[in-house]
Structures are given as structure tokens and as C-alpha cells.
Length: 304
Ligand SMILES: Cc1ncc(COP(=O)(O)OP(=O)(O)O)c(N)n1
Ligand SMILES: Cc1ncsc1CCOP(=O)(O)O
Ligand SMILES: [Mg+2]
Image 1 (cartoon, rainbow, N blue to C red):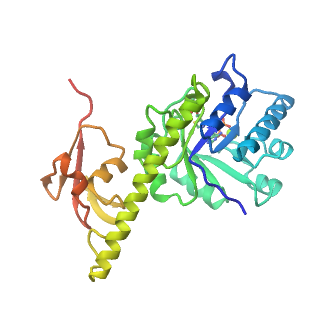
Image 2 (image 1 turned 180 degrees about the vertical axis):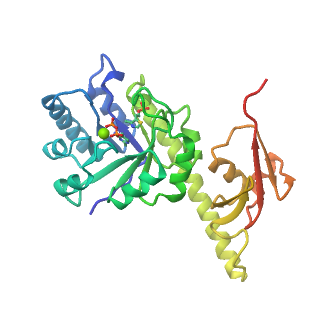
Image 3 (image 1 turned 135 degrees about the horizontal axis):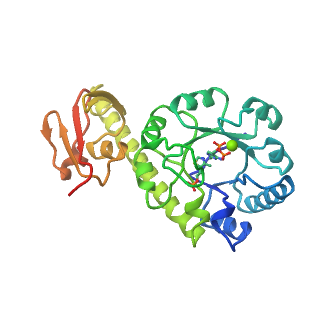
């Protein structure tokens, strides 16, 4: 039975660690808590790739985490990897499934919600959502921005991981937009301490998941209490339809504070209004979102 349970996905990037071996760097990443590892080396020849794949297979087994090969299902088979990652231009998704079998992990890159839903239908086990930010690791690929992360968090039903230009400096924004899994190359393998970079990202993922679970727990308790009191609608519903900045918006955020996080606006200069009243920042955590509530989030860009 396939079990895909990861928070931090680490991909190799040989150009980012001159003077340090793949084994050193990836062992550190695993030590720091990498939950899944991918071999990605766009220029190596077959023999070198196989050697690196075997090394990573051995290391990942030691740490009990899945090992994925980029682009090449045959290499994945030969190295006894757990699966393969394929992009929109790589194609061959169905052939990869036939070749690797139902238990293999097949990941697919997506750059839009439409591609995400198509990848789900094609039987992907997880999808990559990105590049969220522009990145030197994937030059020429336009950033999908946090907007696609928000869309994925609302509509994608299989595991999905945000990727592209993500590191401890901006991970909060990505998590605030709804991601619960992060993937990185340069921020980890290019760090002076890959283990520390992993620990920081894992701690941020754990905190974001904790906030989300707490919120679900609170929403569940409130729903149960409301049901016991005979109330079926209103703020106690797990997800409510509100009017956000003039348009319809379904959210399980629960409070204004969580809504600001969900929109990736935490830490920004914001004025929030609920049903025409300005809500002071210190009240956001107590301001519950009710069905039909009109919320305005106005943020100020720039300064000076
Ligand atoms: C987890 C993950 N997400 C996205 C990619 C990118 O795949 P692709 O678009 O095929 O680009 P290349 O990596 O092949 O250059 C990935 N490898 N892993
Ligand atoms: C392979 C790939 N696909 C989308 S972004 C990306 C590169 C991510 O690398 P980094 O974490 O260094 O931005
Ligand atoms: Mg590819």
C-alpha cells in the first residue's frame, strides 16, 4: 500500500555545493529532516546518474524516506527508486505508470489549476505547484505566484507541494497561502548547513500545520456545540461563504486573523473591515467569519 506522507521535499542541485560531495550534503539534509528526496541532474550522463541514484537509494533507505528520480522512469527502475517525477513537457505519464506499476510514486509538475486537475485525473500521486517565485534553478520558467498556491489549497485533492525560490526567508508566505508541503533545492543544498535549513523549514511547516489543525479542531468543537444547540448555519460551519473584497469566497479560515493568513497577507500593512466596520488588528483573532459576511482586506503597497 502506497503511503505518501511528507512535509519537506529536497531535490539535489550539484551546482550549489562546489567542494562538497552529494553524499555529504544530502546526508545532512536527511539528518535535518528531509522527508522525501529527488535526484535531479539535468546534464549528467547515464552512468553518472545511475551511480548517484544508487548512492541516494542507499542513503534514503538508511533514513527510511522515499527516493524519487527526475525525468527518467527507466533510471528509477534500475536504481530501485520509489518513483519518478515528470513535468508537463516530459509527457509519458501513462507509460511511466505502466512501466513502474501501481505502487510507484508518480509526481507531476503543474503551473496552473487546470494542469493540476488534469494531473489528478491522470493518476498522479502528488503534484508540484510552481515555481512559486522566480528561481535560478529553473531559469526561463515564469513564476506562478502565491495566487496558484491559494487555488491549489482550495481545489487540489491529492498531495501537492509548493516549489520554486522557497527558503526560510519566504516560506511563511507560502504556508500562509495554504501550502502544507514545501520543496527546495538551492535554499537547502546551497546552504552552509543543509541540516539547519531543513530544520528551519520543517519547524515552519509543523507550525503552519498545527495552526491549521487547531483551527479545524476549534471549528469542529464549535460546530458540535452549535449542532447540540440546534444551530445549523452561521459562524460554526467549518467552511463559510463570505463576500471578500466584493467577490464570493469560500473559506474555512474561521476568523479574520486566519483569513489574512490564508490570503498570504500576514505581516503586511492591512486595514480590515467586516460588514462595513473597521476591525482593529488586536480584534482579528476574535472576529469570527459568518456566512454572508462582507469582508474588505485593503493592503498598502510600497511606502515613503
Ligand atoms: C517536486 C518537483 N516539482 C517540480 C519539478 C520540475 O519538473 P519539470 O517541470 O519536469 O522540470 P525539470 O525538473 O525536469 O527541469 C520537479 N523536478 N520536482
Ligand atoms: C525544478 C523546479 N521546478 C519548478 S521550480 C524548480 C526549481 C526549484 O529550485 P529552488 O528551490 O532552488 O528554487
Ligand atoms: Mg522534467
